[in-house]
Amino acid sequence: MMFIDRAELFVKGGDGGRGCMSFRREKFVPRGGPDGGDGGDGGDVIVRAASDANSLAGLSHRRHWVAENGQPGQGKKMTGRSGRDLEIPVPPGTIVRDRDGGFVIRDLAAAGDSVVIARGGKGGKGNAAFASATHQAPREYEEGRPGEERWVVLELKLIADVGLVGLPNAGKSTLLSRITHAAPEIADYPFTTKYPNLGIAMLGPERSCVVADIPGLIEGAHQGVGLGHEFLRHVERTRVLVHLVDSRPLDGSSPTANYRTIREELSQYSPELAKKPEIVVLSKCDLGDPDEAQSALSAELGRPVLIISSATGRGLRDLLVAVGRMLDATSPKPDRPPMPLPPHRRNTP
Image (tube, rainbow, N blue to C red; front, side, top):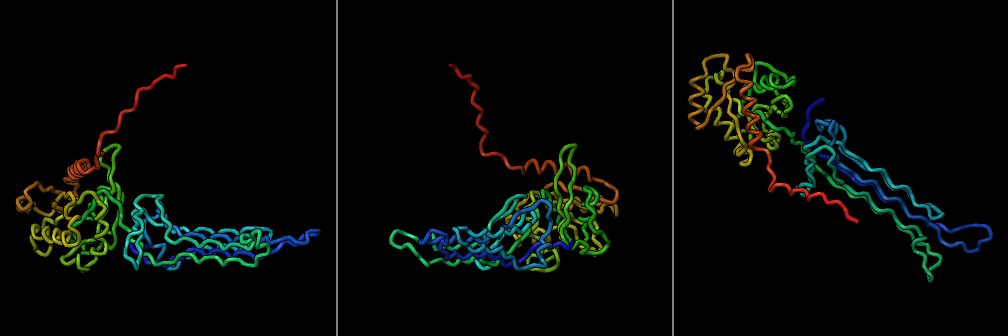
């Protein structure tokens, strides 16, 4: 299935059913009176986050979503059946936005979250509802109200603990395949990764984290250059960034300069994104001596830089330990300690 992280849909709630104009016709009842029932309500259009969905690809073939109309009322004061609600399943992490207004309707961050984006119309009243002491044979009834309609934009932002960022061919996919059970496409040319990949890395016997491999960024990505700009939004939800820097770039460029390039793109796209905790890693260290590049980059940052080789496994355990510590440091802390439970008191007679 192709990975799609944005969809534009037209949604419309079901129309309400028409009210009924009817009069009782029974034997031995010469003046039966009005008995027209109300119409049923139209169905709602609901967007729900489903745990088994991982892309918006299922919505790409259908742009119009219309809920069922309510049924008209009937005689004997019978109300018409309400229309069925229409549910649109999306992955957790999907933001629902009004296309024309530009505002966010709801952020469906967790599985099971839902929001009604187009309400169905109310059913019309039948003529029985208009009867009164002075108006005993009403012929009035109401048409059902139309359902709400709008264009919405669904935008998926993957929810991951760790985001792998870096230039194309920096070794992000290879690293993901070594520390998780994910099987991303890997090749010796840039832009092999064309959409984000997710994997679960084990940090301990009973502890894990979700890692996202983001397509490689290049200079000008925040302005729409390259592939990675389409997926920068996915890095916004991560708690920790692992910035991979090729220790021996094939084009002869400086690892320090390459690091600055990616940092500038992150800052230009979102200042908040650039503030996220970051672990800097020199990759592909099996291809040569990385000490010089490590010293230069560490001096530039003023903090240690890790060295790894996904091919040989060098430094991978140290990287996972560093990730675990940084996740602990960034975990949300309660504003205040929980209130102690009151002591148990036995009821006295």
